[in-house]
Length: 108
Image (cartoon, rainbow, N blue to C red):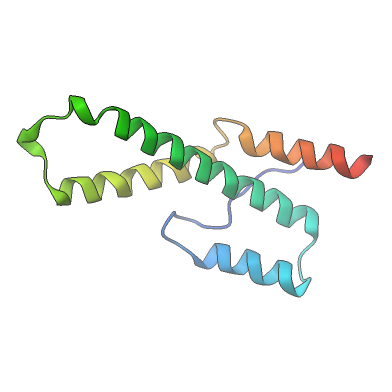
């Protein structure tokens, strides 16, 4: 099993995802490496959805004192970057689990 690396350096950097998609479509990359990167990207998306749900659950606790659109926008940006950071560090292990599952399916 290899180290899981997400294709993008940041949540807002789409060039890594585009490069992964193009190299897989052109057959320039080995499918194992592409699957490993896709597992990392899936973990990023999963963590982002989890953090967004946590934000929505805490909405009733929010004070109106600092509520404005700019704060919400930057809070969303922060959540996206944190999701990417958590997934890159493999803190949850979801990407590793997906990668191991794919390895097990290929052995059969």
